[in-house]
Amino acid sequence: MTAVPTHLDLQRERGLHIEWNDGLTVFYSVALLRRMSPSADSIATREDLDQNPLAILPSTYNEPLTIKDIELVGNYAVRFTFSDGHTAGIYSWEYLQSLKPAENE
Image (tube, rainbow, N blue to C red; front, side, top):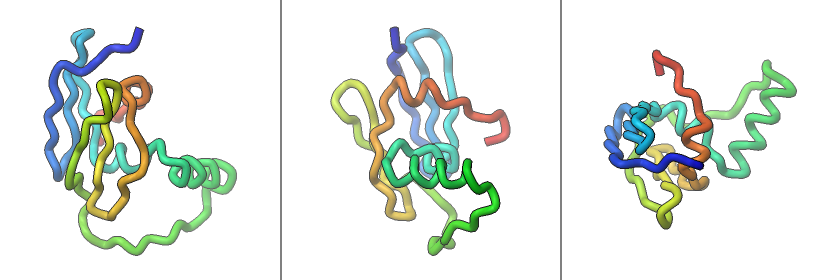
């Protein structure tokens, strides 16, 4: 059974703290959330990088990445609006639990 959040604490410049009903508290950095977006284009980019780790990705965004907004999607997920304009991707509770944030993120 998938755990559900009991508390969300958005820190727009840093990331999202989630307290889960199974007792875990996890911090997801802005960089991790953006990099691991479940949107189709982000998945394709990650697959391309897996096949060619030396690929150079175009980057047109030079400001520090932040989360401008968070929106609940039903009772099973959230969607973020990032400062680089990315809004695609629905982060289900199950998907967020599958992410393994590094201690230094």
